[in-house]
Length: 113
Image 1 (cartoon, rainbow, N blue to C red):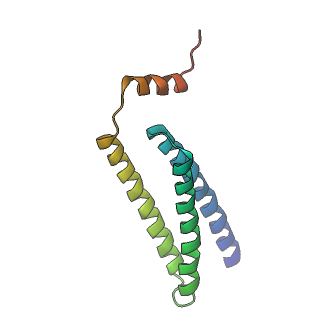
Image 2 (cartoon, helix red, strand yellow):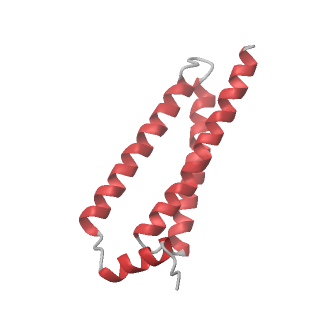
Image 3 (cartoon, rainbow, N blue to C red):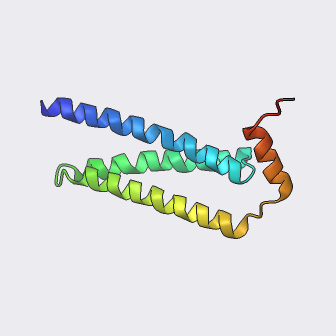
């Protein structure tokens, strides 16, 4: 029975985390131009994170099984802090011009003429 709960937990965790990457990349593309270099840096950072956490959990899970939940809590907290930092940077340093607003509105609301 415990194996079933662990499997369900892993499935729901994967489904929940899978949308974060695409949503964050989409949000960043709305705020500033996302070039190939920016996307590459974003992908490399994501892959490094994918490699580091299993090493940490794998080394310490035998001693303390709670390390898995602690790592997930740390990742979630870091994501929330990073999102707030991005919003603050966007509000303070990114200037919205009328052409940017018109461009965004034309993408969101297509011309019906």
